[in-house]
Amino acid sequence: MEIAVLALGCFWGPEIKFSNIDGIIKTEVGYCGGNTSKTTYKEVCTGNTNHAEVVKLDFDEKIISYEKILNIFFEIHDPTTLNSQGPDFGTQYRSEIFYLNDNQKNIAEKVLNETNKKLSGRVVTKITLLNNYCAAEEYHQKYLEKR
Image (cartoon, rainbow, N blue to C red; front, side, top):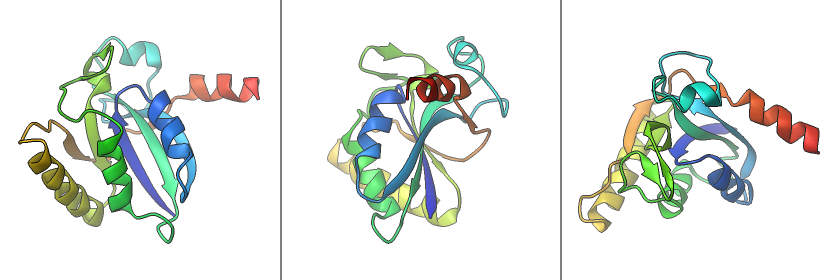
């Protein structure tokens, strides 16, 4: 089992899309890349925490590769818009790949460079070492209550 953590705008749409892909075992919405290891949606929306909304993916690398996940990542959002996706604006909606090790970093750089060539050098996606990830607890609780 491996983990991928990706920021690509509001986390709800991407979480649904990734949850329907063969090899993705579990999805979780959360925040990453900010100043602290715990935060809330309300705090993130102030723009002062530096967190991005992310989807954390647990995946079986025997079924789907990290590279394939990153290709899907670039297909399902616009990596050329800075701090926005669709109607959502703010640094929490940025495009960013949070890597866990050097292998993920190398694959992310390769896929980003390939995508950037296809999009005439307009990609603004960042590649960053995973830091200060926290689950969006308030949303997980609401989700569990609805089940």
